[in-house]
Length: 301
Image (cartoon, rainbow, N blue to C red; front, side, top):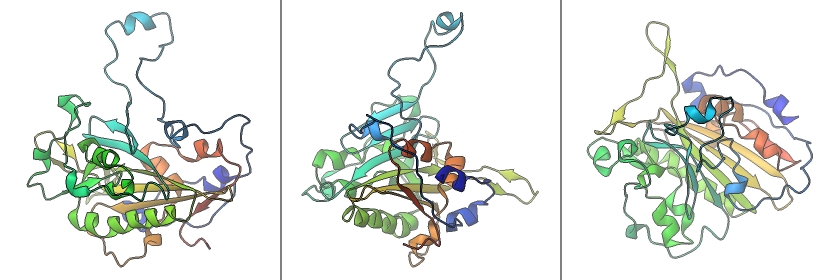
């Protein structure tokens, strides 16, 4: 089974993870549950935190009702917009993940990026949201997670990608070169596949300091302390016309990257991203398909 073949230990340092150290590919043979047909983007989210959080969950135990008398201080914050679904992280002032659906239809249209402006997300409490002022003079670009160019099919869909909840501080060189190349590559895959589901998010990876201990350190910017990721991940789930599902997962450091480095150098085992991000992809994908192939560095395609 794919899950067994992907099982391993999260032992990659940040640098080697960013360059992509995974090898091999595998096929899964689990049958698709009967009657489990996809219905819309939200219903097909390939990540575990895909449960709507509009109402507080039932708290087990005799004291549950009393304990939640004054509400719960926080729940997963989902946003479903024209062009993407997002899970917001109020602590980092950015998203945990953003997922979008690309196909030949979404990539064509007359939407104009120049007509879009970066804007605060008023659906996020003012204590927990980023502002344009946070980025001003920071030295970082306002990097899209769901890319604007992925949604030329609708001006509103493109405009929705400019909410700052869909933005993270990104090194300008990375944003404008290697990461941009990865976004273009994702769009090129959508032209030759039935659908491409793209899940993108930040990572905050540990590194060893001079004292020999591992630390997670990241910069914050602006008065709202917007977290600057150490790395970014992008997971591509390709639906082929044949019915096969192909999985490709990438990690890049949030620093200048030579755009001449082949993108396959940034391929990593999906388990590496699952362990580092706290998300799960494979178990949910296997509920939807009996034909899954994971593409990692060195895979023959």
